[in-house]
Image (tube, rainbow, N blue to C red):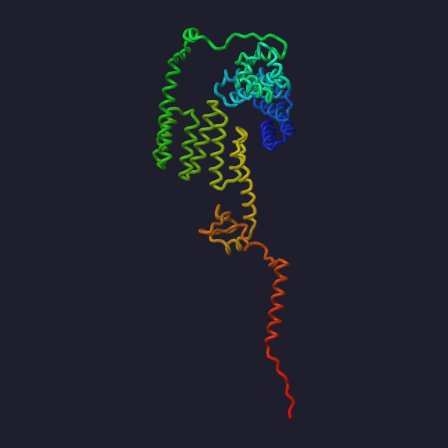
Length: 438
C-alpha cells in the first residue's frame, strides 16, 4: 500500500502536480515513513516555495538516515530558498562529509555562495553611490588632499565608471586614492595599509604547503583506478575507430578491475548499441545502475544509464518501456535531452496507435513492406523516404478522397479564357448564306 502511494506521488511529481504529489507522499509516510519519502515531499514543498515545510521534511530525512547525502541537499535547497545562504552552505558541507563529490551538494553549494557574493556586492553598491553625486569632481578638486589625483586620466576614468555603475566599487578598493576620495565624500577618514607588499616581504613569504602523502589504502585505490582508466582509454580509442569487439574487451577488463564504476558499464552499453545488441545494452545498463546504487555514485550518471535504456527500448519498438525509462532518467536528473526524447517518444506512440487502427487491406495496397493481419512492419510504417518508399500514415492516398479545390481567381481566369477562345472561334467561322434561286 505504501509503495503504491509512493509511485502515485512520483507520477504526480513528474507531471508537475506538486499538491497531489504531497498528498500521496503524506499517505505513504502515514503508512511507513522512510527517508526517501521525506526527501520527495521536501522537494515538492520547495517547488511550491513552501520552504519552512521543506526544511522540516529535510530534517526528518536526515534524522531517519544521517549518512545519506541527498537529505542534506534537500535541507540546503530549503535554506537557500529562505535566503539563509550561510546555513545552506553549512548544510551542503555537512552532506559532503558523508558523500564527497556528490554533484547535488557541490552544485547547490556553488549556487548558494554565488547568491551570497551577489548580496555582498549589492551592499558594496550602496557605498559606491557616493560617487554618483553630480558635483563629485568639483569636490575632489576643491580638497587639497585629493586635488592632485585628477592629474591622472586613469583615476578620472575610474571616477566616471563608479558614477555610472556604483556596484563596481569592489573592483577599485585596492586603489588608495579611491578610498581617500570615498572617505572625503562621506566625511570620514579611511586609512588602510598599503596592500602592495615590499620585495623583502615577498621573499619572506611562506611557500605553499605540499600535499599530504596518501595512505597505503588510498595509494592502492588510486593504482586500481589508474589501471581501470587505462583500459577505458584503450576502449575509447577502439570505439572511435569502429573496432567494437576490441572496445568490448577493454571495457570488460576495466569492469573486472573496478566493478563499481558505472561509466564503464555505460561505455560498454554504447558499443552494444552500435552492434544493435539492444537486449545486451539494456542488461548492461541495469547492472551498472545496480552497482551505482551500491556505490552511491552521482545521480547524473544513473540518469545517463536510464537514458540509454530508453534508447534501446525505442529501437526495439517497446515504446511504453522507453517512456518509463526516460521518466526514470528525469527523476534522477532533469536534462533537456531526456525531456526532448520523452516528448518525441510519446508523440511516436500516438502515431503508432493511429497506424494500428488503419485497415490492413488499405495498408497492404499502399505499402512496400509486409503486413500480416493487423500488425505493421515496425518501424517502417512510420517512415517515408524517396529512395526507399514505405508506408506513411500521413500518405494522401490513405486519406478520405476530397474534391479538388481551385482558387476563385484562378477559376475566373479560366472562365474568361474559355469565353475569349469561344468568341474567337465564332468570329473566324465562315458564314453560309442561302442564295435565292433565280
